[in-house]
Length: 208
Image 1 (spheres, rainbow, N blue to C red):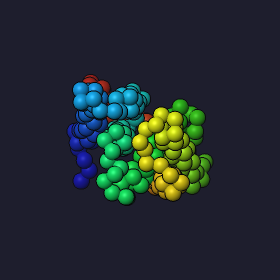
Image 2 (tube, rainbow, N blue to C red):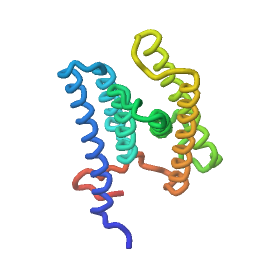
Image 3 (cartoon, one colour):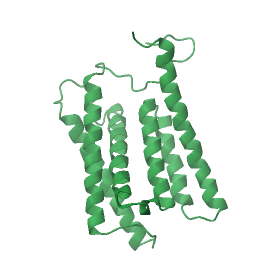
């Protein structure tokens, strides 16, 4: 038995509300570090602004939630030094975050017609994961450049080093490839003309 229309509408609404709750927590973390004199107010402010992007661009609710969770996890890990918890923690963050960002960028660039639509049947199936992986590799590279800048120029305590940099970039590429494969699988089961958002229709209008 298929899901009822009410359930289909409630699911993205719940995801969107959860993403909004993360945005509120991110904003609250800015106030927290300012009140307690903790470093990281700039990073957390930039985090909050970044979390507004999927909301303002009306990306699918699931993508909105995943991006909010990944970026907040990465930013808090940096500001509150969670990377020191265990050796594999840093690798996990550098795997999940670039992959999530790469998938989001892929969807946005396709919507803005800077990349082919994921549902374009003239493309080879391998093109989606390849593009997402390339975007993720770029994100991972920029992240490592930021860590170098923070350490050598801004004199911030960030875990860096040749082995750490290579491991982080490899994790980012692997995570982006996984994200691309997931996008490709979803695109293969999607309608030829995706709407670009799974939010419920406005009141008074039946779902299309």
